[in-house]
Figure 1: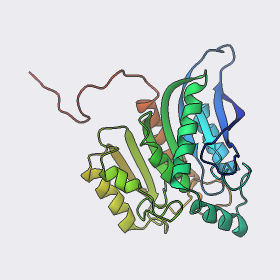
Figure 2: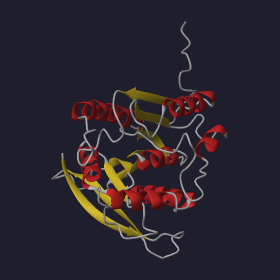
Figure 3: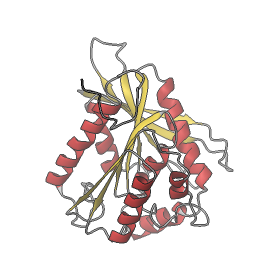
Length: 275
């Protein structure tokens, strides 16, 4: 399926600099069907903003029939240009990550969802995904009731609650408060060799989700951090594994937002009554 890219500069109420957030939208293009509508996906980037690998990842999702919105995360600090995959870019991205307010991250998600639902080619059924920092942001996007599923790649800082200004986020607290209970589906994908999220952290996330009845899947694969990044991955990119996991993500999206099943009746996993 062909795709197109457009740029949307959306006002941010929480940005003290008055700078809008730039959201890149990559969407299917079906010649001859100008009124076609598709589900939406918010794709959150890693600490380098919307880089080539992130745009290609989003483009692959869009080419499978989704309108994808990629927000530029660090609009409070600089323009929408991608940070370089070098030591200086890494230092800037990591510094911004803990200088940005948690409320600012949540506003970015809300504005991205608002944009998708306003587009004439989006049917209003929304999912989220992201990698690294973006994996955590995709997880937090699930707190928005409009998001029906979230697939989070090697999400950082969830287990340690160290995202945002003050390095004290409330992500797992909100899970414990029941904000994901009985809601959409969450998938977290981690590499077992990922030093950013150790086994103890993965176990904490799993236990928290299970203890609070969140519809969740946690996949632990033989991979390192950033294994889906096809550029500057420091030898960690696994193309075959990425293809397999990407197809798993598409299955989740197809099942949760790709089809409109109407209003759900009963709880997930509730046994059927057989006569």
